[in-house]
Image (cartoon, rainbow, N blue to C red):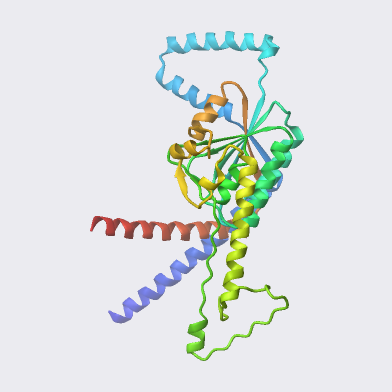
Length: 343
């Protein structure tokens, strides 16, 4: 029985390994085939939000209204379209919608710069751009570049609205303050006009185990604080000085773009929910992006713009594996939190 179980375990291991291998090969082949199709589609993708909403509306009408009501509705719509066709004054201006979901490196800035470049080639001054922004902030240089890309829109005289449903804090708010109008949901997190830096140091641990680390620099402030070297009070002072200088630049940038802000009141690193932020002039209106864009569809042609990035089959497979691992870890974390909460 022991030998049989051992044989069964070995067989199961080989079967599982074979299944994984086949799955990988199938994923690579499928990815290659998809990759060939993607090559043709790489670039700017434009989708009509008006048509999307109209599709939803039609679906409800066909499933809820009776035949008589549908017939009457079709006759009314046909008459309305005929009137609009004859009335050239009914021609609508365009609104271009972008999405930015920020991480610590503001890595989506490369996609956004392509989208903005494409829009500026075609947009007229009566058109508008709406950015649906979600970001808790991150690296200064990354979000500085993202803000500069948005500035290209307003410099062309095109109205920019930024919608925040969840969070636009720190570097996220640096981007948001460029807008002519900021709209946020009631519980969206806004603000955090501050700078933070954290440097772990293991010098004492290394010293305890008689491990020496040599650091050679040319330039007094080439390194101020390090992870493994012995930090000095002079280095700490310089590090704090750099942080304060960055904070002052951040404050000045926000104030230049939102003059009505009491910058000393809000630039203390604190955050506010949307319903509080409007009292401090951090935002201009309380609403969700869905509500705002649905209203826009009544008066404008609304287009969702995205830049499709080419990915190799292996990159796609790697991304799928990465997302699978992240989801697994996230589920385990939520499960543990739930258990602790129930206790």
